[in-house]
Image (cartoon, rainbow, N blue to C red):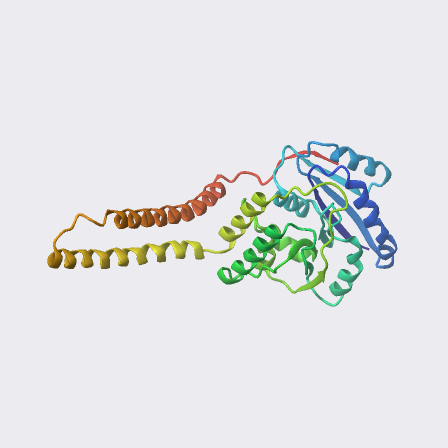
Length: 309
């Protein structure tokens, strides 16, 4: 028999833990038909509610349910990495506990795996139910990454993905502290089939991803899989040096012909403010990359386990 590992990151999701389990178990006839054993790994990312207790209740009835609890909240990326490390399956699937990743898609995903694909990934074709501003910025992010990164990052891509053991092992070789898994999938390669589906709203609870968290996450992706911002900073530095040189020549010529009038200080202030702003902007870009490098060289663990069942 083959083993399927289902990785389910959770943070304050006590209302959704059982619902996800029962929805997943609707595929039990399919698992038996394909001769698949199943293990379900709930990764409790330092929840403050009764998420861990709800998982333990499920485990008393079904020993295929496992719990890995972190000592604090390390973030979803750490939860996914921990799940990949702990998973023993020949096939591994990552899913959100809020049922926005429909377990009913698993039979279709396995049908493509049987055709020889290394992974089957999902992407949303609509963002129904999301705030319009957040949807707009999300689309802008994917368009930007398409132009500044050589790593394929699909618009609307979800973390919901079924993978072979070979692909999982490749991902585990990438042990960077600052993780952007959507980019890692594209970087490791492998033959991937994309499945499209309409956006599904959360069954219960509230999303833990607000606008600012998503913005910081997008910056993580840009700095992790593109060095173009550094090139932009260098280009802007050269451009403004040339402009400054041209301006110096202009001032020398004007002074030689017309003298040195006192007027003009407003334009001078504007120029100084503009150049100072560009300098600070470029320093900020460099600072982002330097901060990521600083965190990497510390070699801190990606997560710390408090309890494992």
